Image (cartoon, rainbow, N blue to C red; front, side, top):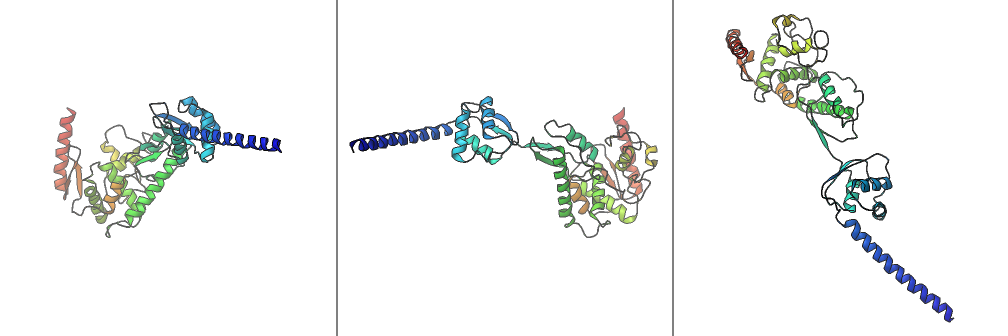
Amino acid sequence: MKAIKFFLGLFMFLLTLGLIAGAGGLYWASKEIRKPGSFDSSIDIIIAPGTGVGGIAEQLQYAGAIDSPMLFRLAGRYTGQDSKLKAGEYEIPPGASILDILNLFESGRTVQRTVTIREGLTNFEIHQLLAGMKDLRQVEPEMKPEGAYLPETYNYTREESNGDILSRMEIAMQSAMDELWSKRSPDLPFKSKEEALVLASIVEKETGLPDERARVAGVFINRLKQGIALQSDPTVIYALTLGEHENEGQGPLGRRLLKKDLEYDSPYNTYKNAGLPPGPIANPGRASLEAVLNPEKHDYLFFVADGSGGHVFARTLREHNINVAKWRSVRAQKSE
């Protein structure tokens, strides 16, 4: 009987010691996973898809973010986060604790990169721009009609592809067109979003000044209503650079537009063809879409460069010819 009491007492003593030790261990571990890291600058780390908590812990130790991979694994198991860590590129802030890192990886707050697509680029130019970005996965882009993409600044992560950005740009253009089309002026000379997109691309290439877009759009609207050819130089340049002529890149012409170019035989040449060309000549920005769908109301029919980056507008051909003569004089002085 005494032996039973002895062993029972010993068991209870050891159990108590174990509980005390366990509690002490938990207290120590709880403090350790909350203790600030010893690094004083941010650490970039990329977690590949399918990487387990053990592999992540080793990456973190190698990068200098943690000292003990085992403690990281135990912390992940203790908090239940070990199966919730998301792949991606992360920036670990200076002094982050193990718990901070687990929370970051569970949140999926990956590094967001940005790319700005300038208004007025062609599809070809956009594809070329994205193809030159080394931090994007490269896939063969699906060919879309000209004007399919909305120029804007887009966020992306390292694991995304050029195709992902193009898809978002296409969705953004469709969304913008749907929204702005519903708010359009009632007396426009075109009946579809596709036609509005064509004219917006011309306005985009004609002027880069925000306060001119609606006025330029108004000129083209007036000409369309009166059956006057648009006579837009950018449409001729687009025709010349489609691959049918001098520059297969569908980018800048690389020289001054010549008088003979205005006779170039193409459905995009709005000097030879009345109405709108068969499709957009670039990817217009939202401001140009707004300008075309809500143009400035006036009676101007002509405009020409004023030599300072803007344009001067005219109601009659006589006024326009005077303005053209002034522009040619300015251009001649600049070339001297």
